[in-house]
Image (tube, rainbow, N blue to C red; front, side, top):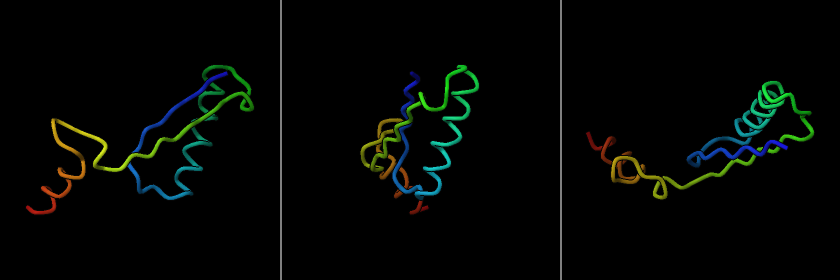
Length: 68
């Protein structure tokens, strides 16, 4: 049973998340030759202050970018 976890920053719409689940499920089913009923997808949403790039949070990076 494929179990796929996807980490994203908060802010995607419900429609975008539904599409992601559907399309990832279809792709995994096709590639792994697994019934779609057996594919599980979990989307983990994280706040920008909980995700770091190059030593600083995404929240801080976005604030710095907006100040330019």
